[in-house]
Structure formats: structure tokens, C-alpha cells
Amino acid sequence: MKRVFLLAITTLVLLSATAQAELTIEITQGRDNPTPVAIVPFSWQGSSSLAEDVAQIVESDLYRSGQFAPMRRSDMLDHPHSASEVHFSDWRRSNTDYLVVGRLSEVLGQVQAEVELFDVYGQKSILTISKTVAKTALRDLAHHISDKVYQQLTGIRGAFSTKLLYVSAAQRGVGEFTYRLLLSDIDGAREQVLIEQNQPLLAPAWAPDGRRIAYVSFETTRSAVYIYDLASKQHTQITNFTGINGSPSWSPDGTKLAMVLSKDGSPDIYVMDLASRQLTRVTRHYAIDTEPSWLPDGKSLVYTSDRGGKPQIYQVTLASGYEERLTFEGQYNARARVLPDGRGIIMVHQGEGDFHIALMDIERGDIEILTETALDESPSIAPNGTMLLYATQHRGKGILSAVSVDGGVKFHLPSRFGDVREPAWSPFLAE
Image 1 (cartoon, rainbow, N blue to C red):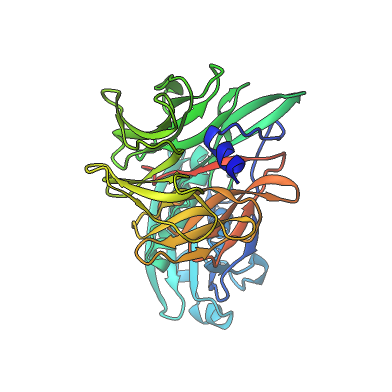
Image 2 (image 1 turned 90 degrees about the vertical axis):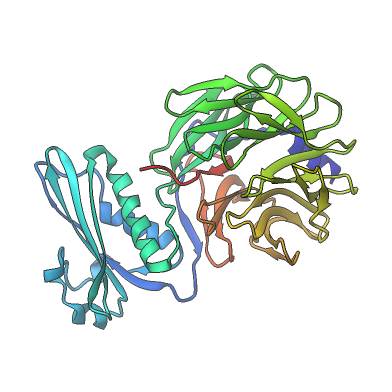
């Protein structure tokens, strides 16, 4: 067990993959009674055909949430594109609760969308979406529509327009790898390589503004923390201390970075003010303290420590330095991530057997196991708090998987070409 923990601390994990890592979607579990919805193919008026089927992307988004059962296009009796063309009686007979129709047209070289969501049984329009985008931004348009429909029907902000980070490594010789930090839509589309190098890349973490990424690299032969600017595509090294430099975690206001350093002896938690680069040591213990994560109020951190003999989750209040152990159930609890509402912690948990992703209620201390696969690790929570990504093994490959926070929805995002690890779900991004 100690060896597993030390591997997580030093982050010297080699990933075996091929040169590309494009993700696909495999739904494995949805809710028992998903809401029936029909997304009618959108009409198009323009000088040339569109590169993307916008309505199909919306359908896929809603289906992947596990909360909706989209009607197959072959079962649709009609294809309305506006309110005047909707015959509610036809859709009621097909047991459809909600209907999405839309029109796309070319305006000054751009695509203008007019989309409506109808309550079939209420026989009324409940949402109108109007948006104009470049022809190259059709997937952005589709995810925007999905977000609005999802929020209207669930009361929760949609996260389909957010992004994913993950790491792959391509073996190019005996003991030699090419490492890549990859960015994609949350459905794996539009994958792009941000960083490519011959030394390990680990622990990517989004800044709250969605414009910067912190990560750990061994490009100077030892670990160091870097910040990558997505707009300029430039990276800046911010630590270069002897020993471990790892586990960066942004403060909620984006002005500080918590991290793990061993420059003063054993690995401890530090906080860096990014404007001044001033470091504040948060923990002082001969045991290993690692994997910090901020609470939403920015006043406390949770972290992993083996000071009690086995890896468990602790919390430290920054102002006072008061430390408190949070987990007592199980042999191993690590990699804590706090839900956006601050009420729960997602973590890697081991009871008597495999490592799984679990949810702990902070107030009650109850732990609920969310996953059933083996060797689950590296959880990352969606900004709306409904889903989380994690790395696992499936059919002998390292893949990303997702599960809803209540455990009711599950799907895999295996790479078509090899293994992927270290997922990081972005915050909400400005449109």
C-alpha cells in the first residue's frame, strides 16, 4: 500500500499509448426513467452544405447526460422547423415530453440559428434560442443549445460547452515515450495537442478563468510546475526546487496555486501567490502530505496524508493552520476533490478490495461508492457538480470514464488509439 501511495506522490507513472488519443463515447448506464425528448433535424438555408449536423450533436449531448431518451429520427412522424408546423397531438401519441425544432440560415457568411423547445403536453414553447456563429463554430453552437435545453429542463446549468484536458504517452522505443497534453470538447471531438515532449507530463489543472493551465513536467529531468497560457500558447516555469514539485491546484479566485514541495525535507503543502511568487508553507509534518484541493470559499484546503499510518484525507484552515482528519472508513482515501457546493468530497477510496471513486458527505462522513471498475483514479468534477471524470482500466487499456455524482449515469470515453490518463474538466468558459 505504501508503494501505491508513493507512486502517486512522485507521479512517475509511464503511460503506454499510441501517437493519437481521440476519445469516443460508450454509454454503459443511464437512469431508469429518462425523459423522452425529440430533437428534429434542423433545416438549413445556405449557399453550401454544413460540415456538422447540429441537431445530432444536441441529441448526443442530451443522451450522454443519461437523463434524456432522444427519439430516433426514423421514428419521427414529422419534421417541423417552427412553431406553426408543430402538431402536438402527433408527438403526444409517440409519448414525447419535449420537442426541439430549429432553423439554420446563412447570414453574411455566418450561421444564424433559431431554435425552440416545446412542452408537448403543455402545448407551448418554453424556450427560444437565437444565436449567430461562424461556420467553423457549429459544434460550439450545438453545445450552447444543449446547455440551454438542459438548464431549462433540469434547473441545472449545462456543461456541454466545457472542455477536457488529459495526458497520453506514445512508446517510441525501449523505455522511450512521447508525452502529450491534449485538449478536447467533452465528447472527445476537436482534440488538439497543447504540449508534446519526451519527458512525463502530469497533473493538469485548469485556472478558474479557463485561460490558463497548471501542470507538472519533467522536461528539465526533474519535476517542476508550469503554467500554460491557452491564448499565447506559451508556458512559464514557476518552480524549480530540489525534490518533488507537484500537484498544482488553483485557488477559487485564480491568484494562488497550492502545490506539493519537498524542498525543506518531506513533501508538504505550500501555497504560492502568483503575483509575487511568494511561498507560504501550509503543512509541517514528517509524513507525506500531498494532493491539495481548495474548498469553494478559498479559506481551506483538503489534502492526502499518511501521517496516521495510511493515506487519508485531511483539511487545513489556512488562516489558523488548524488541521483535521476527515476520512476514517477504508484502508486508503486520496486525491480529494470538493464539489462546487462544498457539501461533498469526491476521492479515490479503497475498502477491502479494489480502488474506486467514492463520494463522502462532509457533514455526515458517509461514503458512497460510485464506480465498479478496478484501479480507478484521478477524479475531476464537472463545474455544475453533476458528473465527474476519472481514469480507469477497461479491456486492458487505460481510458477515461464518467459517472454522475449520484451514481445513476455512467459512460466510458476510451481512446481509439491507446491509453489516456489524468483528466481535468474545465470550469465554465466564457462564450
